[in-house]
Image 1: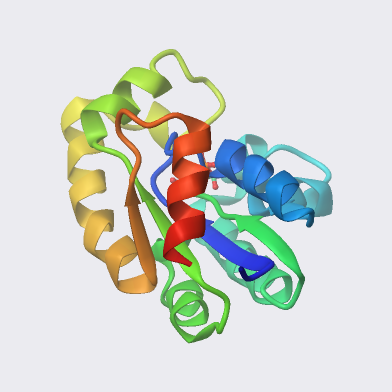
Image 2: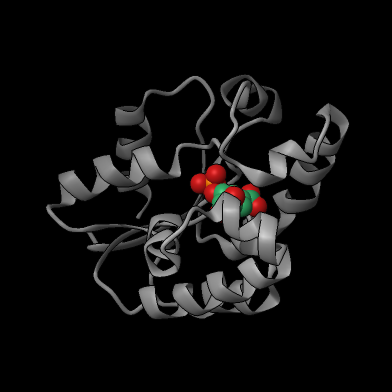
Length: 166
Ligand code: S3P
């Protein structure tokens, strides 16, 4: 199996958790795009978002994605990575397999209840969340080589499924 994988999916889909487990299993590195961006910024995404706005964040995200796609390992992305045409193109063109962790919005809402870290969640009610999920869903599909439905599965089951499909 490949030692390079990119994980995409909505916030709360488990990209970071699954990425860590996969990297351990493959005996490779895990890179987390959000964490790399925060290290680069020296502040939280939340603060940067509040001060500079979403567009500035997306520009930076695309730049860091471009750089990270050259690295070996499992790359967990942020949920909004498909919102930028440049990032979408990078995902579509990379030779690295892109795996979409698809989780139904009701389950995501349940997991994200009470979350205070994610800037976009603050601006959205349930309807807004559903609308964003529906908007992004085809974008994830278009960027992905493999789609894994995660609802009802444990982390280990998700990792096994991904390994079988790669
Ligand atoms: C975002 C998701 C976050 C982070 C930022 C924007 C989004 O990552 O990149 O807050 O637009 O969905 P997670 O998917 O890890 O929550």
